[in-house]
Image (tube, rainbow, N blue to C red; front, side, top):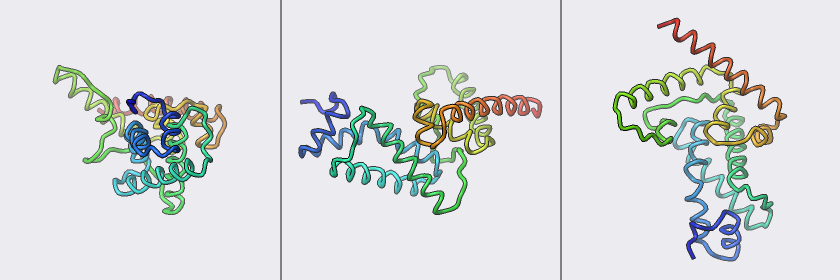
Length: 192
């Protein structure tokens, strides 16, 4: 049986029946997306690794205690756990987070780019860099929705549940984020 061809729920069932490899397959399937979203919130490799480990400890404990509610949305559930642990981290540290890249990580390097023309690649890199700078200037709630929607591929309903606001609030935050990004783009062009 090829474990990587099974869906998440089938892997969970196998794990609960003693198949450790099935959990490893589940972890490999989702680790990049979960870790990267954690990193985007905390902006520190060591902290992101610690929170990532906490996420999977919580997942294992929940599975072993038969408290996982099979809704067929393992990734969204894991992302909710990761998000809550990031919020807890900032509550403890009383810090505010900003989305930014540093020398060791760049979100746009995660997105596949199959351009063969070097000039296009350079222009795209410069555009992404400018966009990251503009996203950093957004209010926290708007920046959070942009990350969860466009990086974590979460629906507005999932974002609303995770951030404990209404769907309309999530949609509004995205709307204002886009309006503010447009204003910031115009201002950036004027400054050049």
